[in-house]
Image (cartoon, rainbow, N blue to C red; front, side):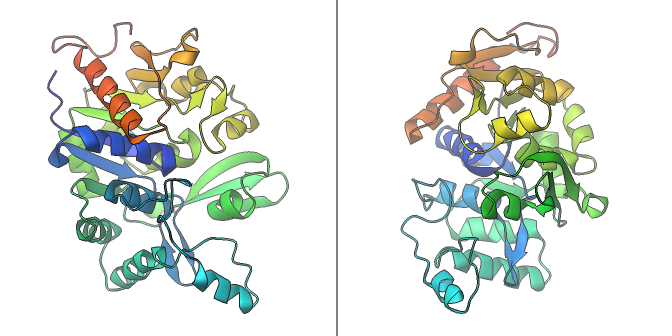
Amino acid sequence: MALNRIVVLVGGVGGAKLAHGLAQILEPERLTIIVNTGDDFWHYGLRVCPDLDTVLYTLSGLVDPVNGWGIAGDTAHMLEALRRYGEEGWFRLGDRDLATHLLRTMWLRQGRTLTQVMDELRARLGVPQRLLPMTDAEVATVVDTVEHGELEFQTYFVRYRWQPVATAIRYRGLEGASVSEDVARAIGEADAILFGPSNPWLSIAPILSVPGMRELLLARDVPRVALSPIIEGNAVKGPAAKLMAELGYEPSAAAVARYYGDLINGYVFDERDAGLNIPVARATTFDTLMKTQADRARLAGQMLDWINSWGRNESLGDHPG
């Protein structure tokens, strides 16, 4: 099975790690990364795109290795100045990171699309891989909570540190959203489509909710493989397991596979969960923890080697893993 073009859907730190692993082993023209923009928001007049920037900084080598987001060694003098004016300053905007938001906002106001803006930013930082927002429209993830009612995503995730109990999630602005030509072309040309180990509800679901996205994915008779973000009932990072329980799902790799349903025909989960009954025709286990850059490249290589082993002449839906 020739895997000349790979598309990976990601959001946040875990997805950025897999994207970086793939970037280490694939020629740049073979990899396209489609990123969640449901986390994006306006803050002090600037357009902030946390997931896009996390992937951008990870691929450019600028990312803070401790947090997995932001720029390594960044300072927060601007934020300190805002606090002197009495502002709460709950969302951290690093001083170097601020340059990204300033340029993005200026270019958007000049009439460029977000796709065009991110293409310019990644080129200027020397990132050769295609980095595409899920849509050029403004789509916002909104979390309904027991304690505070509906919360904008960053208020829920950062200000309240994802501690409120979630009862529902919706994606505002979908009625004006569409799949961009670049995203449609990338999916249409893909030899394999990967779903990163990102939060299925907060990071991948916004991508899948863009009108026309599911149909594009289902129309592709190619390997469509998800990587579980859950290991032994816990999230590697972030609120995935907590959120699953609050929304009525069992926090497990098997439940994530069931959630994706017919969107995937292959599934990779952690070897520590090898005893689980995974409801996907093809499923396999690896050590999916990506603690180092070498771990990222190893796991990305294992996934592609496994997909290659499926064989050219097999139907994609009726063979066990």
